[in-house]
Image (cartoon, rainbow, N blue to C red; front, side, top):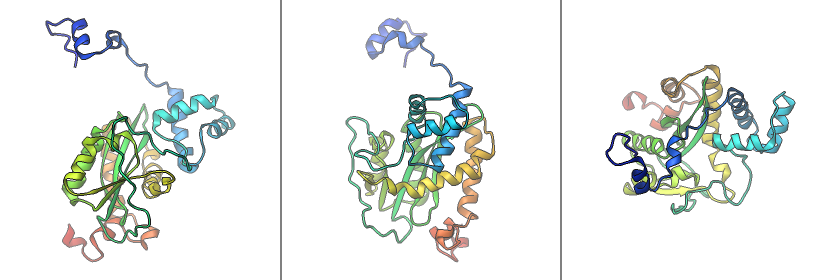
Length: 275
């Protein structure tokens, strides 16, 4: 936004944009190697014990030899975008002014493809640094419909994933997310409303509704991300493209009676026609 080559002085540009001039010269320090190692282990522990908060995770890390306290663990968890799963008044904090939609999946039987989709964001460790992954899932078939990787926790990469899913697979009847600011943003909800999709958001006590996509995160990380030291978001994107092709087309699911997500989504015996 600031044009350093402009004839308008930097001070005047800051005044017009209502930006503090000192912030232009601030460069945030990179995440230390020690914190990256902590974040990697925190991510593993959170997948195994998603009900543990910062206090207990800190004690577990101390037993493993990490010199870390509860407050630092809490800071890293906020940076990673993770929190303990338990019944509480608010599951996610939406941005001020964003509209919150009611929860629509209570007592609803998911019986067909495109009846209900869900989206969520997770943290991905890399060899140097970390990234964020958003994915959209069909709840009936467990099929991954689209994904995006980003080095910033913003709404733009979520909107890109949504637009791709809508373009490739049409529109669902219900789209469910948590109340995070990326999903309550009007840029995200507007494409859904334009297509007549009923927007649903988890409310009080509805943490269990993300169990399917949380299971996807566990599969992605233990079957791919943790096995490789990807260095850049580009490498992660290429790897996940391969993994999700395997996940959709070849990986059978016990809960789907050992069928693949594609077989459930397109219908058994219709795979060649769908292709």
